[in-house]
Image (cartoon, rainbow, N blue to C red; front, side, top):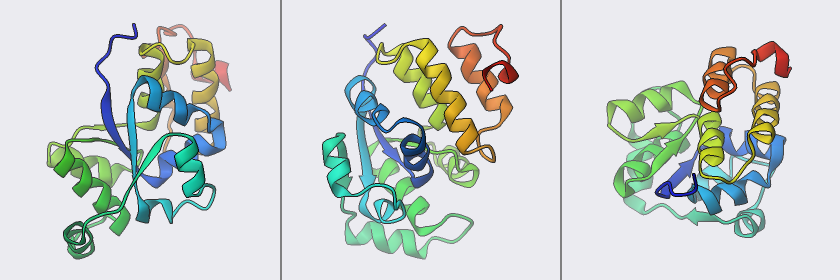
Length: 175
């Protein structure tokens, strides 16, 4: 179970906010069991709930983007914010997996062949890596959906529960 190859992750603001609202200690577990978490400093400035000290304490590597990254992100056209463009640019350049619930960012990652996963999927990977019991993961998934129902749909939750072997557990049962 815990033999999965660790990866490098870059999180966008919505993932950080979901984790903060649900269970901030998961960040340390993800860093330990799944992979090193990176966060662009402009993304940190979007999240009022945490600061640099929290990032250091919980194992998040703050990344100060290079000038060329900032210029590219600010000149990019389309539906993505500056911060989302920055996540995409950094993930693409360094081979990181982007973790986001933002559909336009996810689509752009897929279009540019940048690995991308849902925040809920990250919780499943944490379970698979041996860092979180299934029952606790179910509670985390419930909490994330409650705090972010616009992006964390019943369909996303059903897929996660199925992945965790909870096929017979209906979404309404965990609410």
